[in-house]
Length: 246
Image 1 (cartoon, rainbow, N blue to C red):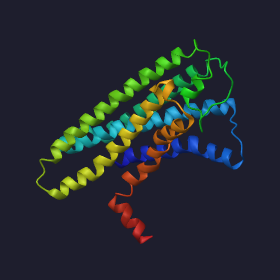
Image 2 (cartoon, rainbow, N blue to C red):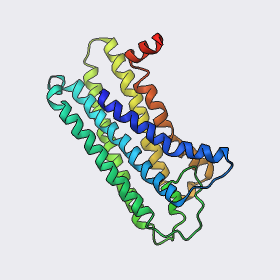
Image 3 (cartoon, helix red, strand yellow):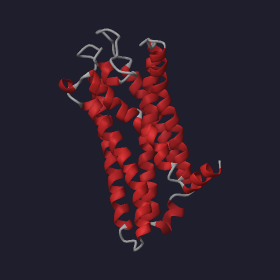
Image 4 (cartoon, rainbow, N blue to C red):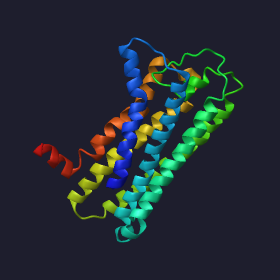
């Protein structure tokens, strides 16, 4: 668990540093400019880090399922080698995924100006600047990506249904509370991340407005990395005891 939390915390730090600092600098300097290469780097890091977060959400759901539903096989199925392989597969696949998205997006010619109506370089707003015939390839890639994300979400939900079924067999009410206190916030963050991301990338143009786009972007790009430390760290007894000592 701590190995996966270490990876998740690195991803949280990187993902929130991809969008928020640049928007804060622009706000302080009263400017809205970003270079073309900076925009490309932001798109790559955004998909790499947020894709990584989602991959580790899925892996952690599987880890929790094995620990609770088949505890006698846990040391065999989730040994250190298996954990390293799963983490390496997540990092490598998300790197290739981000590279594909970035190359595909910035191979499109922008023929409708260079103003992105968002606080970071979000692909749906970049696609609005392209010619109407040139963004279908990237739009198709987004649909495929969201289909995979939905598949992972179903896997997470099924894993937690199995976990809750196993937990409810525990006679101890304290055991129920401990399991639900950890699992339900995790499910809430994943649900928020997936639902707001799906809405941001698949909503029809008729529903688009600057205020709504901003709120949705904050919900899936800023809020999950911000609340993950509270969910996974501040509920940890050892960390709370260390903070009290400090």
